[in-house]
Image 1 (tube, helix red, strand yellow):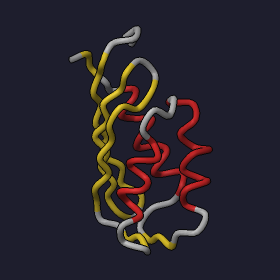
Image 2 (cartoon, one colour):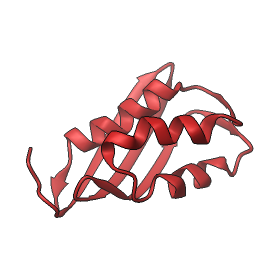
Image 3 (tube, helix red, strand yellow):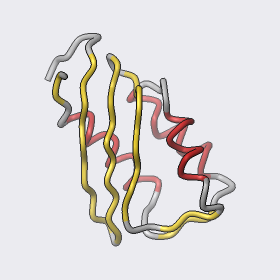
Image 4 (cartoon, one colour):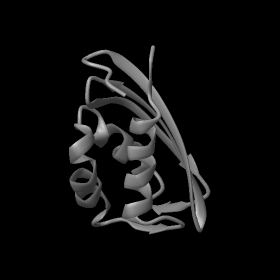
Length: 98
């Protein structure tokens, strides 16, 4: 789907042991806003907000690298880097113009 430079929203649900749901608003090919929820654990617990804020303005093709950097000093259970990247990429594929 080609959505040039507009604002679009996508949502994805990934089951990889646990459930991950992402709701993403894109501006062109960059993440404008993202909310990550699901059945997983992070330590420190407030790291999820850091991840959501850190992904703002990241282009879709830079998500893996950025998440890899942000998860380095974080303990997490119930997802992998791959499943979280997959959730964001699925939201990108399913996005609709708003």
